[in-house]
Image (cartoon, rainbow, N blue to C red; front, side, top):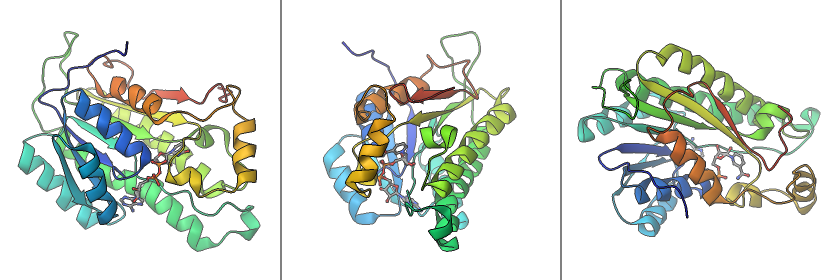
Length: 259
Ligand SMILES: NC(=O)c1ccc[n+]([C@@H]2O[C@H](COP(=O)([O-])OP(=O)(O)OC[C@H]3O[C@@H](n4cnc5c(N)ncnc54)[C@H](O)[C@@H]3O)[C@@H](O)[C@H]2O)c1
């Protein structure tokens, strides 16, 4: 039996919420009773996700690399719901799978722009407002204001040949996680990140069979992570059960992580 969490009355934003992991995470948050708003640049995929998820789900077309659009979306979310309890920074792109000397500068910039700068913009806009909202009782004597979970990657810890931009962007996201956690440590905001290995989403379908085999060969468990396994860890990290782990980087790599 799965652990259950009561997130009723909580409001969550999931960026990249129309995609594979984002949708799975949103499903888990909705299942725990939270209201969820999906932010994604892909309007068609957002409508599909909303129809698929049902329940207390709202959608908003947001390109997370657009500072003005992100700030407007954050303002609207706080105005509409009064508060944001949970932020999942999940939107991301893979980019070119090539050795660095064959990649284009435009690709490097784009991958960092979405995976790191976009997460920065969303965190800046949402956490800046989250700090101002009232605290709520938690399971400990220490009240909480909210949780932020950043979806990084094992490649951000280990690096990966033919994925320098992606790996660098995710390493940057891990450093952003630790830094923001220190800045908000006394505000009752718990900031964490996860480092999954590969999952069967649209992103995994972008890679060749040879690349798949290369990635699989690096995972001691010999399989990809299930979307539900990611969602369950994110659920815990978004709940009051996770009250003291701020700045923590949580591994989800089937044994691939070496630290
Ligand atoms: N699938 C994997 O193997 C894997 C492994 C580790 C980490 N991750 C990370 O998980 C996250 C989700 O990936 P996924 O596997 O669900 O991929 P996905 O391609 O299914 O979903 C990514 C979503 O992000 C959205 N997006 C892209 N650029 C955006 C932008 N500028 N603004 C707003 N939305 C944007 C896309 O439209 C898409 O819906 C990513 O950050 C990815 O790096 C994925």
